[in-house]
Image (cartoon, rainbow, N blue to C red; front, side, top):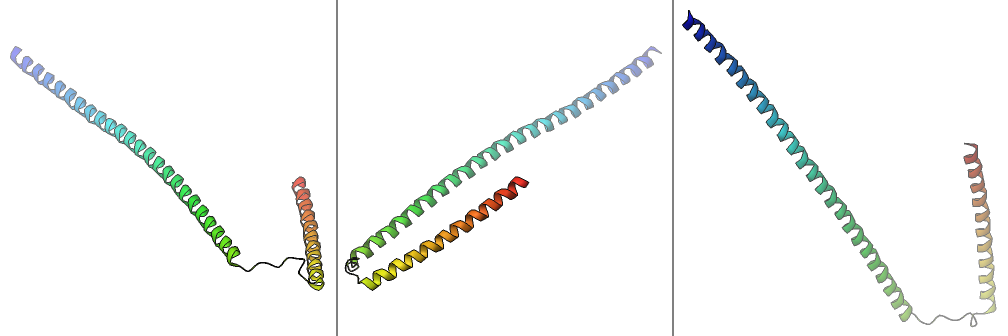
Length: 137
C-alpha cells in the first residue's frame, strides 16, 4: 500500500512539475515576444525619426539650391540688361524731342493716371463692401 501511494504521489508530483514547466515556457515565449515587439517598436521609431530629419535636411538643401538658382538667374538677367544698355545707341534726351511728341506723351501719361485713379477708387469700393460683409458675419 505504501509503495502504491508513493508511486501515485510521485506521479502527481511529476504531473504538477510538468504543468509548471509548461506554464513557465509559455510565459517565457510571451515575454520574448513582448521584448521583441518593444525592441522593434523602438527601432522603428528611431528609423522614423532619422527619416524625418533626412527629409527636413533635403528640403533645406532644395530651398537653398532654388534660392541660389533664382539669384543666379536674376544676376544673368541684370548682366544681359546692362550689356544691352551698353551696346544700345544713346537715347535722345527729352530736350531733343519736338513739341508734338512731348504733348502726345503728356496726354498719354495723363490718361494713364486717370485710369489708375479710377481703378484705385473701384478697388477701394470693393474693399469697403467686403469689410461690411465681414462685419455682418
